[in-house]
Image 1 (cartoon, rainbow, N blue to C red):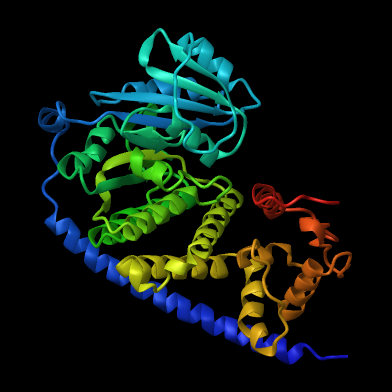
Image 2: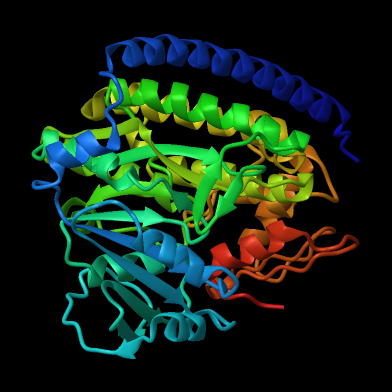
Length: 469
C-alpha cells in the first residue's frame, strides 16, 4: 500500500509557506494602500454642508432610482421604505422588489402605502424570474413595488433595472439606513464628470450601539460588544484606506452591494448582475472594467467617503463566519470567472494591480480563515506535479472542491473527489459525486450538514446541474 505520509508532510510544508508569503504580500498591499489613501485624502476639498450641495447641484441633479430587493422583510420593510422616501434629493424614485417572499412582506407594503396594481411599460433587457405584478401608491408618486418570483438578490436587482427609467440607479439593502444627503453626495461625480463616471460607492458604517429612531441614526455610538467593535475598525480600514486608494488610481474593484450608484446604460450593456453569483456586486464592477477597456473608452469608477450608509454587523461568531465565508468564496468565484484579466496587458493597471491584489487578498483570507479550504489548496499545489489530478471540470470552480472535504485530507481527498466526478457510479469513502449526464449528486456521511452544503446545492442549481440522491 502506498504511503501518503511524505506527500502529506510536503503538502503541509508548501501550504505553510504559501500562507506566510500570502500574509506578507497582503501586508505590503495594505501599506501601499495607506500611502495612496493618505495622499488622496490630502487632495480632497473640504466637505461641503448639505445646504450648499443642494444649492450647487439641486437644479442639475440627474434622476435616480433606488432599487431595494426585499425577501421576508415583513418586520421592518414599511419603516425602511418611509426612511428612503424621506431622503433629501430632488428627483428620485424608490423601487422595492419583493423577491417571492414567503412571509407578509408584500401585504405589509400594500397596507402601509395603500398600493394598487398598475401597468408600467418596460423593456426586458436583462434576464430575471417572471414579474407577477407592479404596484404604485396614491400616497406618493415616488414609490413602486415589483412583485416577482424568487430568484435571488442579483435576479431581483435585474428586475429593478428593467423597470426603472432613471439614467442612474442606486442599489441598497432593505435593512440599511442612508444619511439624508447620501444620494446628493454620491451623485456629485456624475454631475461633475458625466461622460466618464459610470459607478460610485460610498462609505458603509456599522450601526450597532447607535440610537436609531424613525429610520434615522440619531446618535452615533460605538458598539458595546467586542465583535462589532472590531468590525468598526475593519470597516474604517476597508473603506477609508483600501477603497479610497484603489479609487485614486482607478482600479477600484468593488462597489458595495449595500450602497452603490451606477449608470444604467453601462450596466445593461454588460448584462446586468450575474444571477446566482455569491459576489454579485464585485462581479458587476469587474464586468464594467472589462467592458470599458474592451471598447477602449475612458471611464471612472469612484469611491467617495462622504456618503454614508449604516448597516448592522454580525454580533456572533457563527453569523460572522458564515458572512465572511460567503464573501471570500464569492470573491474567488469572480476572480476565477474573469481570470483571463489577470496580468493581461490589455487591462492595464486593473489586471496587474487591482485584479491581482484582490485575488491574492481573497485567497489568503480564505486559506487563513477557513480550515475547510486548506486541503484543497494543498492538493492543488503539490498534487499537479505528480500527475495525480485529472482535469478540473469546466463548470466547477476549484474553490468549491474544498466544500466536500472533511473526512479525508490532502491529495488523497482531491484524487478521490475527481475520480467520483469523472466515473459515473463510483462510490468513494467520503461522498458520492456522479457526473454522468450532467448529474451532480452528493451524499454526506458521518457528519452533520453545515451551511456550505446548502450553498453548494444553490450553486449547482444556478449553474444547471441536477441534484441526485
